[in-house]
Length: 457
Image (tube, rainbow, N blue to C red; front, side, top):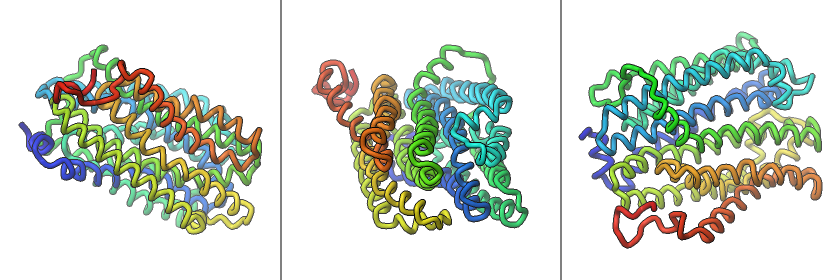
């Protein structure tokens, strides 16, 4: 039994959770700050049109991150379950399969996207005026997209291998260098929007180099093994990781849908206001994803080891943490909206007023977002993919898209902001209804009378 495995099984629940939570939160927060910093530097160093252009290109990060989480979380869940079962050889094989699978999928995506770059820019909501900014940013990110994906996958597996601190250090390195490179490329070298993209890429390369240190540690279980195609394992990785893919993939759809809706009903003021709110949302969303990412290796390990009562304690602690963060983010938005808007150098009073109104409505969604994401992550971590997918599809597509059409058409443009909080709140209600209607089929009560082995029917 490795030292990390011993700690997972024997240390107190709060201590184990904290040891994964803080590095995961900080790591995810810093990952989002990479994108936020691009926005702040672009807005202040180039202008609001450039900010709108970069925001329209931002869904490419959601797409790349969705692939990272799809394969990373799917593979890491199987990895931790295998470690919990004591099957080291299977765990290493899953890691190697995941790595090759990610390179293959991203490679194909990048080639196609570079070929159809302008069409993708227009699809994301670019106008003729903003198109040059979108293309400058998009081109660089696509060329080096594989590096961004590999950093995310390595971080996930290293966290699952009992080294969340190194995963955090890698992302800290990336974030600090991104700030430095952004200043150099935009303000000193006048490279424009492309400079912001190159800053992100170069800092990510260094972050990957830092993460590779994990493989020289004697206590690390994580290793590459000889690759042989295992279609069954690959299919299971993709199946288990599919909820994470939909979470991030749908985030890209949400951004594009919001941009198109604001452009149609409000115009450039709406698009620029949403750019500010969306940059803030990327940061806060990563906080909640960080809580789920902290729970995933813990839950998967305990599920594999059949330590079900202890697993339940982690879930309850995760939900309490998530709801607390949700309330805190809502208060921050309501109390410090002006200061947050000022960060982006917005001076137009109409844009400022519409952005502030957006923050007031949009941030209500954080009260519900944490519950949905954590429950989806929990079900994914114990291989209950249908329940996880139900939560994700409801909040991001099934409820959100109709609301985005209904609200401005029947209530007015300012209510576009409410599509997000209403979709999140209604998802919780829908989940409770589904679990009540199918309580004999779904795991309504995770622990029954049979003790620890009755967690999931």
